[in-house]
Image (cartoon, rainbow, N blue to C red; front, top):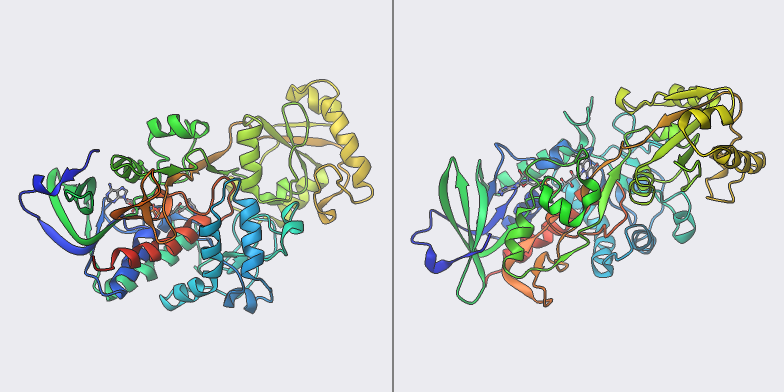
Length: 484
Ligand code: FAD
């Protein structure tokens, strides 16, 4: 992992002004802006083609402040409301400077994506869901309209989705419709890409300035000189077991919502130069279930107790389940709720739950689930007593979703179902400059995307990764293109 010095390099095989490692969302955004700033840009991508996790993603880009799409769908928003939400929901520890820059630049960033050719359909999808049913372009994607955030900031939907017909998550998703126009734009601007090129070392001048990388292709070593700057955009560390064990051990042994190329290389290479890191323990956590079911029931822990309002962002339920309840949770529904959810659900089959236990009474259900005697019954009693009046004074689920649970009850076993990806990474400034542990920029080195600690310091909302990856990727590309 230790850098080579320029004196170690006998000859450079390739040279460009800006060298970008990784052709996912952060790399593509950096490439476009570095090229527009007049730099000769070379992207080195380890896989056989561009895309990374971004091209497989659902495609949410978290934007707001009054984008043209929000306005077309009839929603008011402001950078201040967006920042207030993000500082509350992405923390503790959210980076005020990054959040402010992101919110103030969000409307312009949306326009930039549209100008690059990313299509958004001006239709709002208002149902609880992980993703819209079809190609609708706007959705609530972070619990903005649920407790406690609806009282912290005026709610607005900010999940912006590139339009795609017949989308199939994991195969074809909105993320592809984000990536394709960005890569096409980069190509039109003359960006060169080399595939099957895996960077493995940085190269530094005697004064510590990063001036190139060493990559490997088909077993051969390739030396690449960067006249102006190197941008690391190689993704996170979700597929590096040692790093997970050291920083985010809750994710060990579960499905990683990332690609296997996310092996932490950027963090390791930059740390070897003294780079700082931040929020290495933070994780996005998904619960593979259609929120239409969650919202109509009670989510309880293995003590039979509720711990979160079920109408919030499902990723927040996932985080609370994994980190606060040891991933030992259940969803309790009555027949009416279950049938209604099944009827209105537009989610794919793998997000449709099957109850593991069904019983005529709460006590019988609790006994079959192995919960402490009386615990679930007490939870249900309190829930139903207030639900009669359309209230949830304990956890503040919105009145619209509160109804007494009656008759035969079923429980879905959520234990061990969470999956996710690590959010921590390199400490960077607002222009993508990688920061040394002493807080100063490491000359010549920039980073963006999940290689860095971005907007999400702990919490999460769908669209934050493609959002901060593309936003700060652009800034990193522009900064790296500046002449030394
Ligand atoms: P990537 O987009 O993965 O790009 C990194 C690139 O670097 C890859 O192409 C990789 O091959 C390459 N690379 C790695 N190592 C090297 C190396 N040594 N040398 C050269 N190249 C290298 N986020 C959202 O914001 N909204 C969503 O809706 C969403 N949905 C998701 C759905 C799924 C199924 C998955 C898996 C993820 C989803 N995410 C979503 C997360 C999001 O896709 C990623 O966090 C995001 O793509 C990170 O951007 P990135 O540029 O850092 O990494």
